[in-house]
Image 1 (spheres, rainbow, N blue to C red):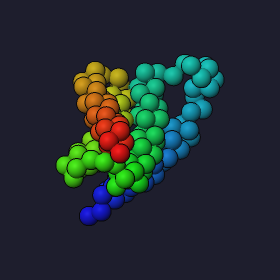
Image 2 (tube, rainbow, N blue to C red):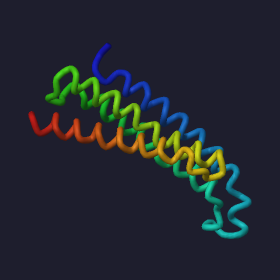
Image 3 (cartoon, rainbow, N blue to C red):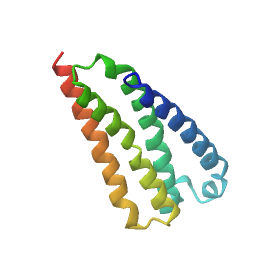
Length: 132
């Protein structure tokens, strides 16, 4: 499989899923406007955060998919960069799970794990770009 192909596929799917989630959030926004926009509950806020983190992570994976072949990393480094950028989706999934469970802290470590994967993939991108 060509380097980065999976990232492009996952990124495209994530943008589609995030857009559908955004439509669902948007169509159910009416009750929150009568009390003011900032009267959103914590679960609703976490669902919104999952949507707003999922969309840029999808774009990030599209960028990684295109950029990965040009990075000066070994095959193992490219593989890990690809995997870590895909695993970054654990963060918005954790935020959505927290929203679904009423803001429970049970899934907070899940979101943190996704953030660590995201930052680790960025470090690999920087290393691969500096080596050029």
